[in-house]
Image (cartoon, rainbow, N blue to C red; front, side, top):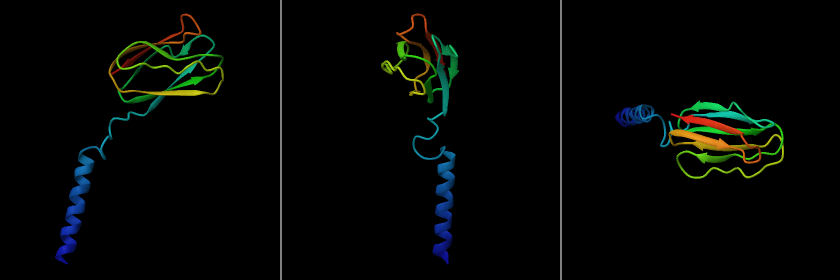
Amino acid sequence: MRKLYVTIAVVALSTIGVLALGGVAGAGTDKGSTKVNLLADTFSPDTKSISAGTKVKFNWVTGKHNVIKAKGPGGPIDSGIINSTGIQFKHKFSKTGTYKLICTVHDGMKLKLNVN
């Protein structure tokens, strides 16, 4: 009977410890997702603020586009040129800062993404 109480106590304390730390390793770094549409010659919205760790889904609504990082922290972002609607390019923004994303197919098509 004593072993049962000890086992229950250990499991309870372990569970409390995991919950107090925010779950399993890596938990708390994923802030969910949001969507940006690529229309005829514009990002919609063209300015957006998100939390670090958010995954952005770029959704091709019309035409031929690409998503390129022109400025901002971290490494390159390049979806490649895609000429098909319904396509989604996904990128997780982990580093804080201001990103300037452009479509090189459409001059002046840009997105300002603030990552906090």
